[in-house]
Image 1: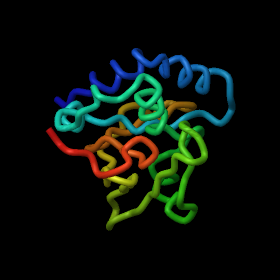
Image 2: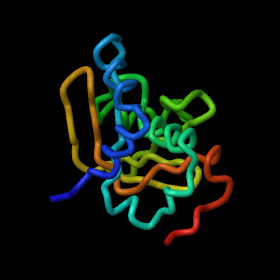
Image 3: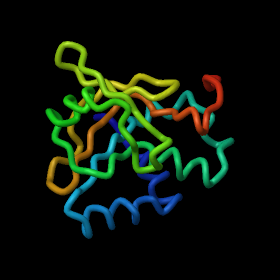
Image 4: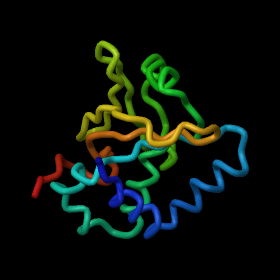
Length: 143
């Protein structure tokens, strides 16, 4: 069984979980969240990030709208896609023979299983942490 506790811990530590809950409860748009596996965090030195950077990193893993998997795949026609972290924090989506990939400046994450698929929330497991260039100015050194 794949664990996603690290991301949940960061959601709680940064209070982003409340932001995401508010988006789900109070808007018609919904939310789509990319949830990295615990193993994706294991090689990153996240501990050196400031609280503001960690919050932006967590926000970067969500889109301020509900997207089914088919809709996420079709976002490739609208690249780059703004994230919950703000319009400067964008992702690119591609489809590689049926596998949907979400790309950031320093990572190329594959969407795996669906964690939650109940409107207005859609959450997908990804195999890598999405690393924005606004936080990681150069490719991060893996530990």
